[in-house]
Amino acid sequence: MRNCLVVLKNKKMCSEEAEYLSCTRAFASAGVYFDKIAVVAFDSSRDIIFQLKDCHANYDNSVIMCPRTMDTTLKDYLQPLYGASFDGSGILDNGNLSVFMYFTDGGNASDFERFAEHINSKLQTPFERSYIKAVGAPREDIIRIADEAKSMNPSLECNVFERYGDYTIELVYPRGQTKVMSEIVRKFVSTLDDYVYALENTSIAEQLFQLLKLRKLKMSCAESFTGGGVGRRIVEIPGASEVYYEGLNTYSNESKKERLGVKESTLQTEGAVSAETAKQMANGLMWRGHCNIAVSTTGIAGPKSDNTSKPVGLCYIAVAVKDGLTFKGTTAYKYNISGDRKTITETAINYALFLAYRSIKQNVTQ
Image (tube, rainbow, N blue to C red):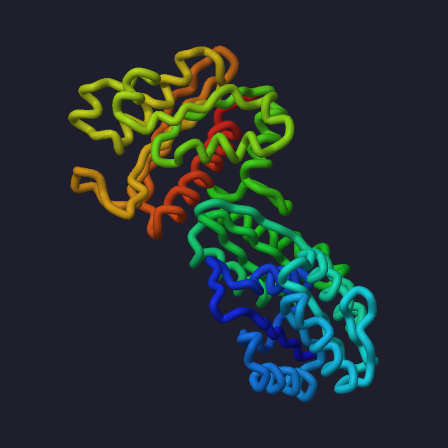
């Protein structure tokens, strides 16, 4: 089957992400992909008619994303063209061809899942999904394993989604392939072992929260350039008070010294953005005696560097761990993250959450 997506939008309105990403992701999760994606200005009648005629002539399934104000006009054109009517859920199906209407100013993202299910019901091919979640994994390794997995199971579709260093590897396959898919999942996990945090579709913050809760641990954060983002991701989860003790935004050098005990000599010789400063920040939280896991962040988010020769994107994340009454030590990790200010900080937040998760798994035995 051939599928197309037509997006009708105000050409004067711009957004950070393409309006159709939620649509393509939902369809990919159902093993359905678009052969064509067209973005058309909604005040260009000639271009709209051209695209709609092309949908009818060349595609089995068409998704139209548009403002609700275009509802009546589009239906008046499409229903005679297809010889069928839209039902109350935005689906037109004449027995051979289908059209799905989604309103960009009030639609629900779950509509896309429903549309994809309608297409699969026509194909009569039940499918299943498996997930591998990983932070900071080398993309080239993921693509290589995906290619190898495809050779092991030609009916497999492998979707890779990345957001600020957090990868969702989604495997979509026909039902009844448990054995070969178990082998494929093991192949991903064994290769990406240092980066994997879950085999279900969950977030790194949720996974860390559940681990903290299971081990009955308390976590604290001392953040500089991430501005409280690490702690925010934890407290967004209901029940965070069970696992989160405190978060400090120690942005200035003075705050690092006064609130965390970072040494003046360290700031002078190593700088605020250094492994030693990050470690002393985490230790400053740990020595208060109220947490088992202490996470600190310090870095340069840009767009300009600080007064040193250190580059934008350089950051250090430290994790201090205590197992019961035994202090297991503090480790600092260095990263050089590319991108704008938001990309650098959001990626560092994901790294910090993942490092906290991995440190617990490796060091806490209870």
